[in-house]
Length: 117
Image 1 (spheres, one colour):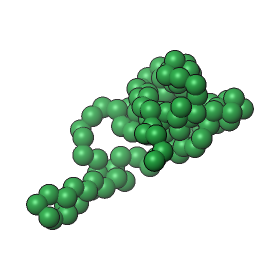
Image 2 (cartoon, helix red, strand yellow):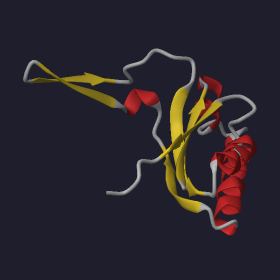
Image 3 (cartoon, helix red, strand yellow):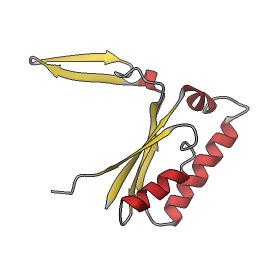
């Protein structure tokens, strides 16, 4: 079964991406995690995302498109990236989520994908 692991990080973790003193350790942790997923044969895909300020939100209401810069939700954690994994069951997906570098400080949402039609 395929699951999406959506990784929510706080502002401090986003800042670590560009902080010269912290970005090496930050990137190394993510590279190791991605390598572990690949070596286990469970990685289907994924990507890191640009910071929330780079997002655009679109709604279609009353036949008119509404476009807004930035994220829609005002939350402490922001979607920072995702992995798509293929594992036998939810327990296996939860095990991988617990190993995620963001798990100690952020939130990892696990959601099954819809079956292919």
